Length: 110
Length: 119
Image 1 (cartoon, one colour):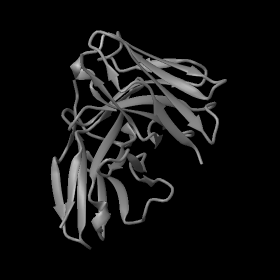
Image 2 (image 1 turned 180 degrees about the vertical axis):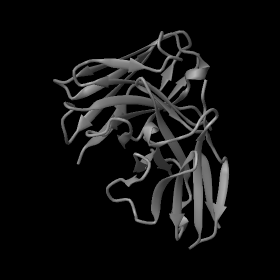
Image 3 (image 1 turned 90 degrees about the horizontal axis):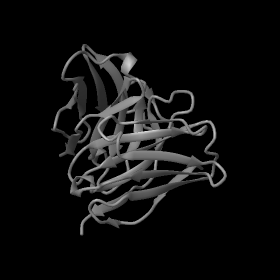
Image 4 (image 1 turned 60 degrees about the vertical axis):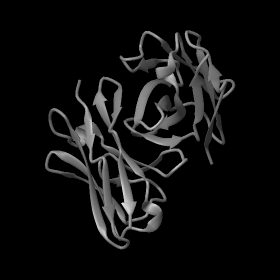
């Protein structure tokens, strides 16, 4: 079974830039997987940041951007802020009405 | 503003059936796909299954034999039934709405409800 891979943890300095990636254990992530990025702050429900690889959801700050980088989907935070400290999940549409999530990346801002 | 709210027992005994309901307020359940997603303690997210407003469904193959998702448009609610639960089914259960023009992602989530399976 193909799994979605993410960095377990990353850190970034306040004001810095960080890129989180979302890959597949077998194969490449493309627009056809409609990569979506969700932010989950401690004790909160997930919030949709980016869908269809590069489209920001309404109300999401412009410092969050999504892209396809090589064989992975990527979420870049430019000018990180303290309240960006969260777990970020990548979700992929695998086709045939099946959705799979990555294990999440815990982002620390310090 | 559309909001989703999960409700149901927080404690279920092993081998029994877990039942949850998601109430959609501030908008119509029609025209959308609606899913259940769970998060086991300290773990990531797992998609469980969806129902369309027409009643059509699709389930995660790993849970397919135990799960039923249904919709009640008259009450603007959809529901989850998971049979023969074990401790491995202990999780926070979220209901979520799929995007309207693009159902390939989830654009709105409930706050989640913790269900513990224990005798």
